[in-house]
Length: 253
Image 1 (cartoon, helix red, strand yellow):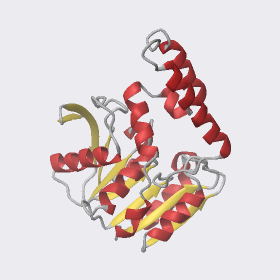
Image 2 (cartoon, rainbow, N blue to C red):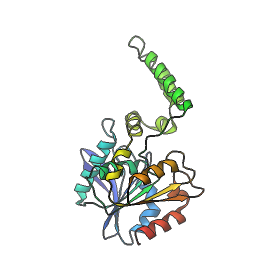
Image 3 (tube, helix red, strand yellow):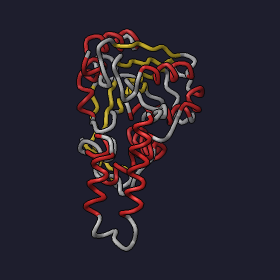
Image 4 (cartoon, helix red, strand yellow):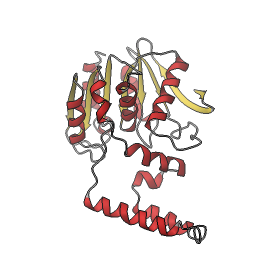
């Protein structure tokens, strides 16, 4: 089903009855990623999931958004549905949005589940710093007014060469959005989260490593970390049996 928020058509789904649980997907994903989680939880809860603006079947934002703008949008979505302080489940980027909402006191859920959630600003390796510096130099040269237009194809090739897979696969608006969100560190607001918080991370996750999860766990007073052996950034998809069993216990499904 669809609704309209801030002039954008937003796809969302609702299943089950009871206390509301909202599922927030990760970067480059959609609500479809949560099918197994949704099927588990809607036996006891009213489960709500959506495609963030720019993802899945929802409209693209007219300009680049940061985490704050996505958080404000999510709050508007809650208002549209008439739900307040739902249990929150967030994967990767969805976890960032939850941190922003709860760390600033706008949403105060009883429980939160972070699935390989982002929120800790990644430390750049020496190689990564060199690639970033090289791209900035190339961009500066090719963006000079004199030859900006004829060099646009070369600039695009430079972006493809130096950029990450997420960056290269994203449309222009989301490329600028990605730069905004990955460079925001949310650890300072994590101590404000009062909810009982479960962290589930893949042992081999390189996008949001277990070291990040331990930082998040140390900042949230009532929290606990489960590491899924042999799993990566999509632990709940790669090892559904293990992850769903943990969620089932935490939410008493």
